[in-house]
Image (cartoon, rainbow, N blue to C red; front, side, top):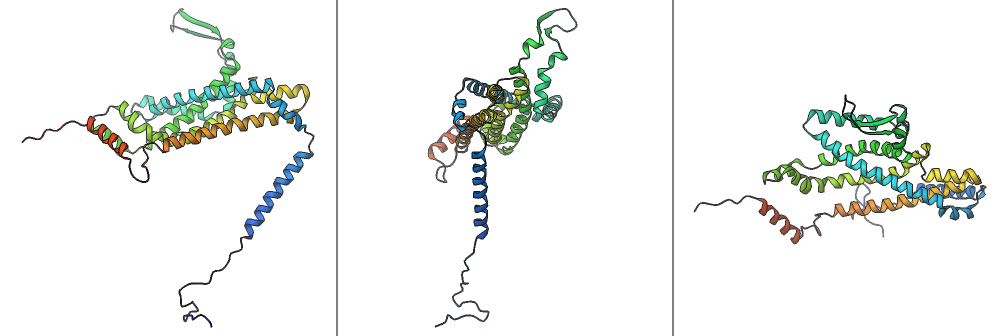
Length: 315
């Protein structure tokens, strides 16, 4: 017995026949990807590399010292860049035209020059200023007089090059985060008598951090890898440590693979930290189960009532 159809050939039940799609493109792409991975692994296995020596280089004192120096330089440079970037961002959004011009020029300069060039400029600063002096201008009174070469070590030059370059990007990240906060919330906080610092701490920053943290975490990961550029001036980071070892035993690939493994470990740890930090700020004051929690609501209402002026109604 055949199923009744309408005049246009459509089944009377209103349902069209299901046609099974053949996803042949998925299978072809999967086969190509697997083939490429197998070919890469086969080629690496055929190379003249002593894989048994790589674990030894992972715990080599020179490699471990380079790892510590890499982490220290990245953390110090990133923290300094965040502090400087916040200051530049606040100057950029201020109503002072001089501060705005300075912040714009600062961002334009340090964001425009390559990081490697900035590191080299700081490292060779003694060619421009042989001595660094601090005193009263246009007088012979000098409080500090030191040689530039004594101050501008490899660490200081790398720190200044990385931190100042990153601070220009952080200024733009912070400025974007601050401007992402709804203006109406700031005006509402101002209407109940909150000071600018209170508005910044209670209203602006908690919401701006959701916008600031993701790119800041990405920049810190780039900072960890960017410390490799300090090797050109002799700073002992991971790449420099690997090159120092391979210059004696000529095991270039083995030492570089060991450095690459440590880079991946450090970047993976930083990525996990960024994930948890983002989730912590995303859950801040987030409604529970689609509803505002009673505790958060009582805390918010109580704080607003405590700050709001009392209005006495005349009987």
